[in-house]
Image (cartoon, rainbow, N blue to C red; front, side, top):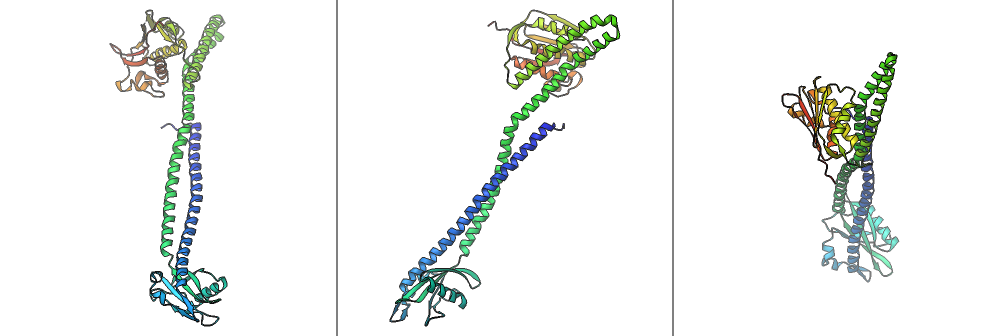
Length: 416
């Protein structure tokens, strides 16, 4: 497998960097949102728990009352709030100082004496319902203590507790699902970012591919005339008597190089979409004869034509014809090459070994090497591209009696 060019490798690295940046940005945003959600949920659950025990403690504090200094608790035994409370106690101080517990359901533990003292001190200090988190029975419990007034002093406090374990478990589940959801979203964002960056870079990769194709095609087109020009110059410089003829031949080759460069630039602009092909009526037979005549080695080429008019670009069609003939000369095994022109058809036949049936379509692909007379694929790929640009086709088929028949088929001139 051919390694990618440095430019393509850089684009691919940029794509992965863009993907990582997209995923990291998404992860950071999701992390901030998740932290906010977790903290908001934790505060909300704490507030809900406080409100629940606070309302229960306030409601029960209204059912407990003092009469002539005596605390009456009879209503607690009939109150639904008292019956459904997880933890319940009534604290009373017989004298200023430490409180004593008057009532506590046997089903639930209370804080130790130090904890009860702390709760009582806060109630006396704040003179309103207070909230305290203290351990009871080996577990953290949220407590609410509501004061019960005996005249102008706090004579008792109703203590209600609730276990936050269920709320904490729900909070932990939320954190767990948030973590899984954020991880899934980051992976989805990375995949989406990779897809989008690939789509965004596709035109750049296509442009690089077209540039590489153009360079390969330019080298293919210019190699033969440059080699011929070098031979002519060397021949003229080695023999003064041949110098005038060498100069004339060199000028002819330079003119041909100029036309080649013009055609290459036109083809590059067409492929890049910056220039439209202008199809004009032209004599296909005359174009083929002139193209074959300009070839540096056309002694083995026989041309037979009949008048044919097509709508086309002369430079592009000349390149296509030149590639067909040069391909036949190069890969036809040194056999004669026959070129014929009929209405909308240019046929080039050699007498070489031909191309296997399975390779006849593949050799028109760029950079594909077939067998025998297929060549590198660059020249024939140009032929196919020019044919399609003119709404025509290019094909290979076995020639009668052996060899290969390459055809360039173009729609006839419409006369409009």
